Every structure is written in C-alpha cells, then in structure tokens.
Length: 220
Image 1: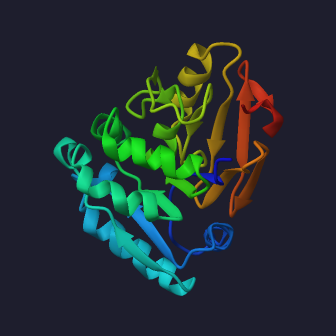
Image 2: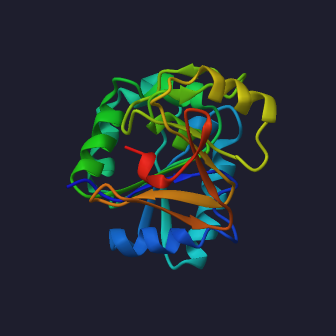
Image 3: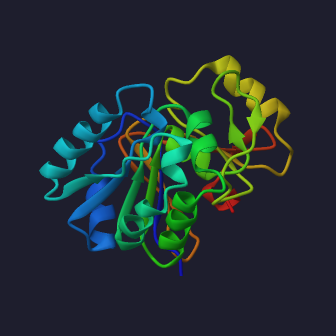
C-alpha cells in the first residue's frame, strides 16, 4: 500500500503548515529527506536551511539529497538514502527543471518505490505540480506532461495568489473529465493510503471539474 501523499500549495515550512507534524507522525520518522532540485538555480541551500529550521521546531532533523542536475539524478549512489527514508519532501522552485531532472531516472524510480512501500511523500509548489499528470505550466497556465505519480489530475499551487488569467486559461483548455485542484499557500491536499483525500493547513483547497467547483471526491 502506498504511503500518505501531501500536495502543498507553497509558502512551505513555516507557521500555518502544522500538517507537517502529522506527516512525521504518520511516517513515524524523526528525519525528513528534502529534495531541493526545483530550486537548483534559486539558492537550494536556503530551501534546505528553511526546512531544517522548521522541522527542528517539530522535533525532527533534515537530510538534504544533493540532486540538482540530470547527472545527479542518474547517479545511483543516491538511491540507498531514498529507499531508507520514511518521509520525503520535494521542494519548490521550477517545475520544468524538476521534471527534466527526475524523469526516467534512478532517483525518481527510488522515490516512487519508497512511496509505494509506505513512505510519506510530500511535494510543495513545483514539487506538488510535477507529481501529477498533466502538469500546469506556470509560465502561462497551459497543460504539459508531469511525472504522473497521481493522475489524471492537475494542481495549481499558490492558488490564493495565482494569476486569475492563467487560471482561466487552464480551466478553459482542460479536458472536461480532468479535475484541477487549486491549493492555497500553507495548505496541503492529502491523499490517504486508502485513496481518500482531505485538506489541512491555513488555507483552502478548491477543486474544479468542467470549469466549475467540485468536491474532493472528484479527485482520482
């Protein structure tokens, strides 16, 4: 049975994100493996440091997985740390870079295998977007290929600050049967191991189907 999956709307690792305490409890973990790939060109160490400060408050420590490039993702020396992790967190930044680095790589295969064997997997911002298929292209709101861990569905993170024009474009071009989840910052859309969904955190999750609001039961 897969582990808990958390799709976080961004503004992660700060007050309002107390759902992270639940992730640690479900994982029965005192360490979080943070994957800062999406922030490769945006000071990834700062993301790791922010995560370390936050999880220290929650009684856990952070281990960073130094996967920033395609060469890193195909380096199988990273696989043991992933397979041993009970809680894995994909950080935010560029979803396009994150997808191109991880797609069809040993690192991605190890992340999927760990989750399928019960590890908690979280993605925030870009990390949440890329876990789905299709993926929303943040540059204009079009739909593109994601890594497809969960689908068919798409995620709009930072929904409370997202461009209204980009959202309208996404909803207009989305296939009728495709659910789209708008997740506010400091908010998580959680998929339980049995496949049920719930929301947690400071904001709201809004699901759209056929361009209109729908319930969480519209998600796959």
